[in-house]
Image (cartoon, one colour):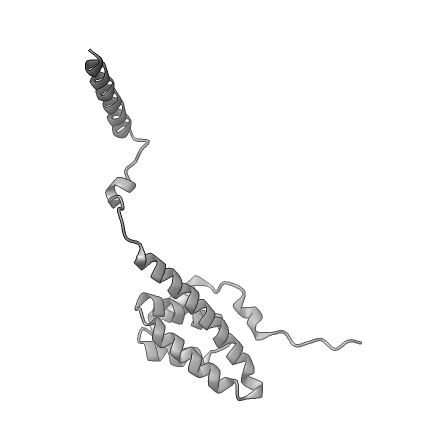
Amino acid sequence: MVAEEPSSPLVAFQAIPDGNTVSSIAARYQIEWQLWAKVVEHFSDPAFHAAYLTQALALEFVAEACARYRDHRSVMMLVEENRWQAEVADLMLARLESLAAVQMERAGKKGFELPAWWVFLPTASGVARMGWILLGMALCLRLIFAML
C-alpha cells in the first residue's frame, strides 16, 4: 500500500472563515498585541488570522502586522515540527501585501468624482424622469430658437 501524505496545514487557509467568528474575535480582542497573542496561541485557526488582518487594515497598522509575521516566520523556520507555521506566516504576508497594495491604489486615486448624493440618485423615480423630460424640452426649444 502507498503511504498517504499528511494533509498540509495550509488546506484550512484556502477556505473562507466564518464571518461571525471573525467579527467576534476582533470585537473580543481589540488591542493589537492581545489579538496577536491569540493568533499565536491559535495559529492553526484561520479565523484568528482573518480577524488580525481585518484589524490591521481597519486600524492601519499593516507594517507592524507584516513585521510580526516576518518575525514569527523566521523563528518557526528553525524548528522542523513547526515549519508549517512559517508557511502560514508566508501566506499571511502575501495576503497583507496584496491588501496593502489595494489600499495604496485607492489612496492614490485623485481627480473628479461625482458627489455621493448624485451617484445614488434614483434614476427610475418619477421625479428623475420628469427632470429628463424637462431638460430635453428645454434643449429642443433652445435649438428651435437658435435656428430661427
